[in-house]
Image 1 (cartoon, one colour):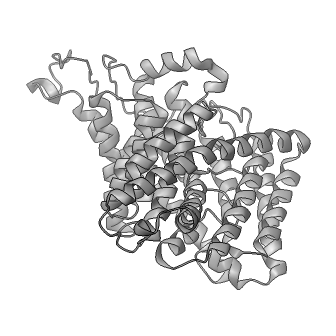
Image 2 (cartoon, one colour):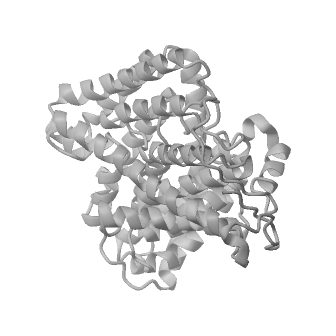
Length: 477
């Protein structure tokens, strides 16, 4: 099939096609987006289920905090140490075995590259990340899930030999599908692509991204699980005192966000230059995480169980502070070592801890009716401060809890945190992943303006996957 997609719905050049009747040429792209959403959700669930099976093998539990709590202290140290070393060994072996192991990740592939993700390097990265996160490494697994879903979407684009501009759009759809499947948040997944990866989408293109995200969520709900990601106590009606306190949480998160980003970047550069050997570097990071987890088992993993516990049970201030500090050190160490994954969920949990600390110590008593609210607002605010994407952050914390009332407090807090965070540190957590460091601000701005040209022809032709591999780069942190 050969379709033509133009800016003002012109007649198609080939009258024999099924679109001869004047049907919008964007329709085939929406069909591709729906297929990408379905495949992306399957990729996310495959990664998740495999991780659960590995954790079940050595601990008898599915979730990492429960696994850490069930193990003796020596095993709590040994498991992440071995996982870090094995993850590094997989990356090292993969780089030696693949001729061109470096290339764009999904963000840069959409933003500034040619819209193609190499199969071999991405499978190596996915396997390395799977080993690390299954062994309790304090890194986000969702980053790899999104990358894996984007890889599946890239294969779809290459099978049908889509042109470069539409390969980018297809990978953007895959990223939104991976986000929706991982977080049960299709709207936030769409905003994730629009705000962070592209910095804005034309209405016609965003419709394809939204279709992909919704299809991924519907598939996940129908085949694997239902309901919100987190079960939380219902937040009472939000009043003016709550808005004042939410703004205070946003200010604190906005001030802390740049510090958090500085810790991640500085430690990454210093540690990786100090120890070049991947298995040794990642194994030492796992050892540090294991030692930290002897004090609190909540150090293990991306923080899903910790976030759930914050939202459903009461925590003493001293315990929250301990978890906050220990996980902060562990996340910094995992990121510094270059263990494949991401920091989106760890950032949410760090922000939730920060919101609880502010709720315990700084909020006016009249508004301290629901620590659940400050947990959610803190999570969204720190995410906004580090991503500079306030709309995505506020909608995400709503979608992950299905409690609309949190939006009234989270939106102003996220805007304030994003403004303060961007003023204090221009770079976001995704700056390097988007290729801005390499391409420069001017080139990046030009790439954002031309990422998916509205008048670009859309060609889909069935064929085999092209043999050329472009390689892949290291993990997004």
